[in-house]
Length: 114
Length: 116
Image (tube, rainbow over all chains, first blue to last red):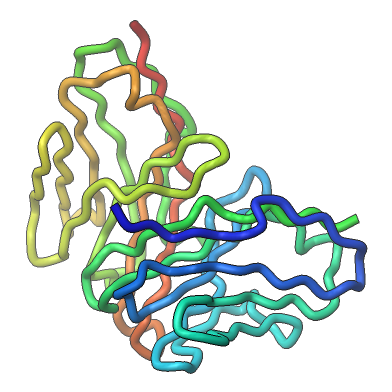
């Protein structure tokens, strides 16, 4: 069964450094998403992406965040200058349409900011 | 701002019995609801969903019920099996929240423990 894959599974970064989290969505999907889950809290929506542009973003997704689809298969989340509070699990998801179809999630990247 | 609430952090059920997980929501614009299951160190796995035009959807051992007037949905698992032990998240989509690819709003999850 096709799945969303994320790399790396764990990323440790010094505060202030840039980090790029990578995702390969399911191949025929057109809609891509990033979520995060801070330890002990709920899964929170960050951003959605369709047709090479951001479709929707939450209040969390401020200027330090950016997303990109650099080629036909990868979808990346960049955090420009990491802060301690960016430590979380980051999940990528994809869906084949936006309306009433489930989003399928990867296993996440655990980001630890030191 | 808890638009999706799962008020039971945990639930313990005997193997073979019915598990009922509950979820309440406050945003009347939500039009699509999903249940996800999550094991430790894995991402959420889609289980079952329901559109707001329906009140019930069934898939094997899993049934989701939606009561729009009460803004309440529930997931029934019958019969419960040991492999069902996991955290279950309720999620909802507001079609008017953004530009088309709508983000999901999640509850905090309920940890279901199936006891032998």
